Amino acid sequence: MKQRYSFSGMIHNIDILEYVQFLIMIGARTILELRLRRGPTSKLFIDHGRILHATSGDLDGEDAFYRCAQSEGGVFTHFPWAEPQMRTIDASGDFLLLEAARRRDEKLAAG
Image: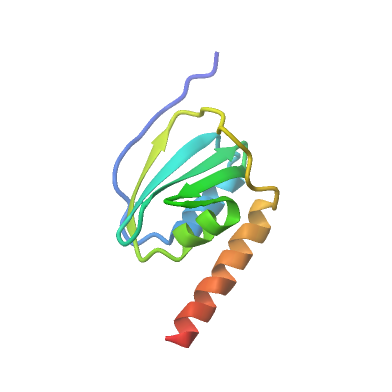
């Protein structure tokens, strides 16, 4: 059996999109809970590098993911994998990340 190492701690000044991209790239299987600085607690269900489901307050799916991506900060925690009650996202992780970055750029440009 392969030995697994585990670390915990804080990461300052990280862009949440870069962190989610990292999780996708390594094929993570986790529930990422985000306690947004301004907004509801949110969850991303990431299964072997695919985002299957996202929740954020009254939003589910891609809209919930984009809310998380536009957050101005917060705290995240990982939880062991559990199947989501539903699958609300079919788009690829690359598409979600690019679209989230585009939306965030438009929001910043609009002031």
